[in-house]
Amino acid sequence: MRASEIHILTGEYPPQVGGVSDYTRQVAEGLAADSRRVHVWAPSNGDTEEEKGSLFVHRVSGGFGPRGLRHLDSRLDRFSGPKRMIVQWVPHGYGYRSMNLPLCWWLHRRARAGDRIDVMVHEPFLMFHEGTWKQDVAAGVHRVMIRLVLGAARRVWCAIPEWERLLQPFAPGRGLEFQWLPVPSNIPVVSQPEAAARIRAGRTAIIGHFGTFGRPIAAWLARAFPLLMESTPAAHLLLMGRDSNRFHATLCQEYPDFRDRVQATGVLPGPELSAHLQACDVMLQPYPAGLNSRQGSAMACLAHGLPVVSTSGRVTEPIWAESKAVRLGQFEQPESLVAHVSALCASPASRRETGELGAALYRDVFDIRHTIAKLAESCES
Image (cartoon, rainbow, N blue to C red; front, side, top):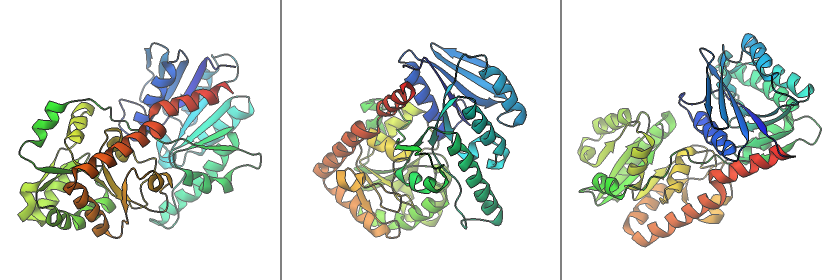
């Protein structure tokens, strides 16, 4: 039977900034476009209601603590019958310093009362021994939380297959269904050849990097930067994303001889970011644990048809090597990635072939329409 109403629970939603926020908006709008009534429940400092066609955004006053959950109960119970709910699971997304046990008990209770709950796992829990003792305490609580959440779920969607392996020991012994549901790009492709040409003006080749410049990747880029500049003497480096300006300043201070060959954009609106991506010849996208299907920055590059050089690691799915849609190297060996970048910069034919393979893989596997189709089908069963 077709589900006429779907409820989505999320820790963030626009205008809040974040990957889960953008993802949830895409999912909600996609499901609502098929004439389903979609209700998004997101935190806020006050109760507000937003309506756009068959999409309704409800703001939960007080967030997802005990008081907010009691209020949420009363509002959900205005809808008839068992609720079909999709929970966007990130332990850090629901407050209580990422240790919101009341929310997990609440989901468990709603499931026992008859609600049908699916869980989309963006991140399952913190890992042990990767930070302070306080992080280890949180990691332990996260495992209690995910056991409760899985106990409430009828189906679990995983942003990467690795999550299923980590989650299986915490799943109840009732044949819980796990499925892979990759995260699509949240940067729309807006064709802007003239804007891209203006960005490229005077540059023979542009190597791009799009990300947030967190500590491991920033350190990697700083190490690889002189190798990159020396191996591709005609190329410029274009840094895009949050904290790119800060990292740009660091590079220019450390390598003043190359300061004229590196540029940063900071945070850009979607259409402007799309134009800057289109101006790039090659994208250099290293990830410490390896490229995987929840890396939104890589997805944006593939959606724009750009040749991507990235890293293979413990969470890298086989599809990347099998499809030959990206060039892969090892995170611990920047030289291997720099060699790929240099080869692509030197060969327009190789750039075109790699970009086309990446764009085809994105269309066939990662595009948002596949996400919507799978979620819609699950809500009908």
